[in-house]
Image 1 (tube, rainbow, N blue to C red):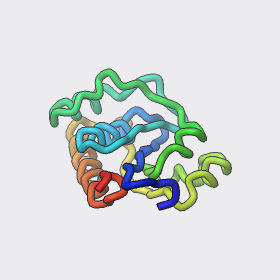
Image 2 (image 1 turned 180 degrees about the vertical axis):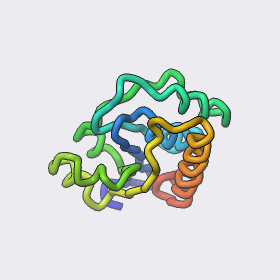
Image 3 (image 1 turned 45 degrees about the horizontal axis):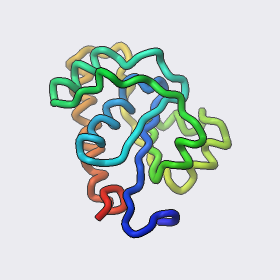
Image 4 (image 1 turned 90 degrees about the vertical axis):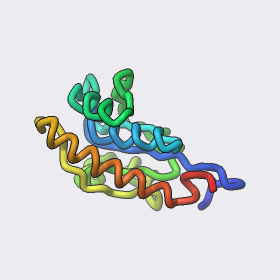
Length: 144
């Protein structure tokens, strides 16, 4: 891929609306798998969802010290792959952001976690884990 040299790993950017749940889960699993990853939100919340922190702790991933972050153009430019956790995000982002992520965006349709029970969050967490694990087959992401 353009911009990649000598098998260097591409960084992943997971984006959701509030950066309090879905993108935090994806970032946590990606980092646990040794991938270079970060997350952000189009309209970030003030904190990471406590039930998400609990659900991730159950599978050995500690995101309790994570803070929510606002999506920036620089984040998009520096990412090798931008993963939107919700299809509605693509059209709601500013046009310059959409232009920067052209040719390096993947859209996952993950249900919103806000207001869900811990049991529902666990199910969604497991879906996100499988989706992140599927990224490890991309040699440009894992540096092979």
